[in-house]
Length: 64
Image (cartoon, rainbow, N blue to C red; front, top):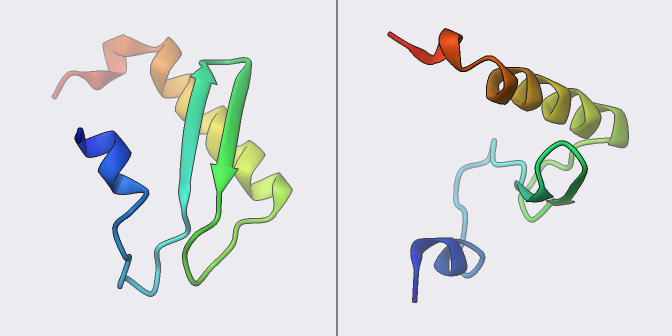
C-alpha cells in the first residue's frame, strides 16, 4: 500500500490537524476532507487553494 493510500487510514492525534486536500485536476478540481478535530470553512478552503495555486504557478520562488 502506498503512502498516499495509507494516509487516509492513519489516526491523527495532532489537535491542530484540519484534514487534507486532494487535487484531482490542479487549478480546477479538488476536494477537502475534514477528518481532524478542526474543520475549515468553505472560504478558508478556497484561501488555502488559492495560496497553493500561487506557489505551484511560481516555481522560481521554490528555490532556497
